[in-house]
Length: 198
Image (cartoon, rainbow, N blue to C red):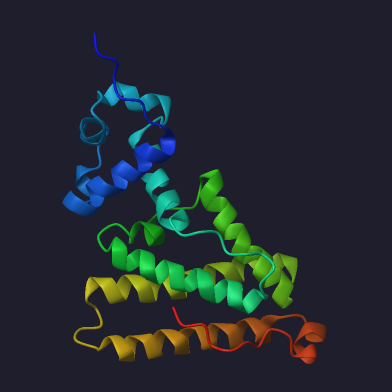
């Protein structure tokens, strides 16, 4: 009797993302992903507990498909790199990336990406109690732009125009972060960096 193909959780999630890319989020079912992997739906329960767990895993894959940002970089550059990665992720997975606006970050791997943002904001001088709020604002702005771009909301705007708009958004966010930073950090002028194009 042939052994069923083996897979780990990451492979399962990558294949689930491929199903979503090809056929839409409604096609991401235990049976549909199992069929793609050559196993029964029951075989997936070793790696994911429910369909909701599977969808949360898609959020994880979307946030982690690029290499992690080196933590030794200045805070502003780390945020710009992450923002550029989110924009590229949206272009690669236009029908799936809206999940990042509708699902919370719950898996350990996805939470680690959010912690990179938290750490950058702390380094920028945002006081601890305000870090989650500023992260929500920054993330929503970047995700909103990325999802709007791939959904066609910006119409026939050229790539050059949108690149300029994205750079302007990142600069605005950087200035807002500096405005919200603790006074001693603001006065030092830390954080201003050259442009990092997405």
